[in-house]
Length: 116
Image (cartoon, rainbow, N blue to C red; front, side, top):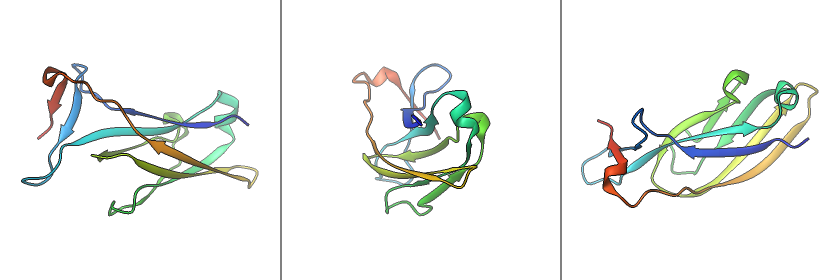
């Protein structure tokens, strides 16, 4: 089975990197998506995916049972970290993947969209 974990920075309709500042003096946080990649047949055998985010997240464990969106989740973050992914299959098997979340951001301020 060749399923893998993918991620990307989520952009606005205009194609700009979305960011928020949640509290005064806080860091810019970027909207990211994480999902399971594989062929259609492989994805059809998955029943649930659990993502364990960095310990600094209040809601550290995120779960998706949504096959239609490739078991994706989204969240806001400012840093890089390891995500522990548990993939549950219909036959009762599980697959564990350690996925390092890192991303590149554009240099130009014109390529960002602040979300209020």
